Length: 398
Image (tube, rainbow, N blue to C red; front, side, top):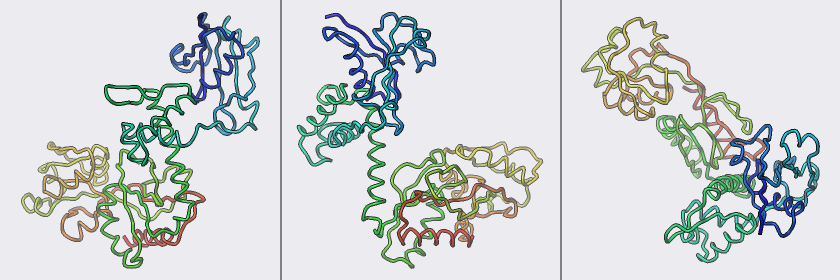
């Protein structure tokens, strides 16, 4: 059987091949074997100007509809005319687009198959997926076969005694996982659980450890039945992922899908342990070079900005030790390893309790403020409103 190859260009790869099959069946003889190659393999990145490929039977462009969903097999097929000939030489070019048929329903694979596939790809085996889903190994295997048949692509392959995702399957699993996360998040936020006494909060690690968690007993005194579950994020990863009722971040930033409430300003100043300053006093700025300075990779420029604000004109301290995250730098400062630049009022309790000293407390450098973020248009149950008000009151008191 002779073969004809088609190039497929699309921003929706999984659906592209389903749509491409429809096009190929309409424009080639049934006796021909049809093969498909993505555009990136033939042209590199998605081309602005399609180059002629004599070995191709056709170039198929698949375009998403107004709702961002991929086209389905009921979409109309249009063959490019003179403009396509100029761009592609003698290679026929076909367009399949739901913009021309925007009323058609979404074509979705079975949700049960998608769920089984996502769990299997994430868990790393069919057996682990079966345990998580509470079904048999065979049931998971069957659901994945259903999905592979629907997509027309292999998603898993055998590797020794186990099945592992193909590169195409891993990429598809990442997108499906995000989509299921969004469904779960919307279900939780708009379902009956909005009246729950549990509040899911995401906050930067140092802020959570040194400021938020030490103050939670005050909130529990007002709401004894409440439970605040705190998850932490790093400075290097300030994106918002996961399912949270409230997210705390420094800003402002363009949080388009969230309502934001500013509740606390932050400033940087020099901090050190009392034991260190007892061994090696720090009475004036010129004493700084006698110490080791502790810096943080995720907070570049903190020392330079503070020394500039202090009008320091001496030599830069020769001894320096760097850490990847500030909470590690902070621990080194608490242990007397050197001087650090730390944020107040986040470290206010440590200073008040004598764990740290701020020898030049009047010299401060402004940092970004802290904001409380909640999803736009989502219900705000009484517990969330109370927590927001409490955050604002605590922040204003600093």
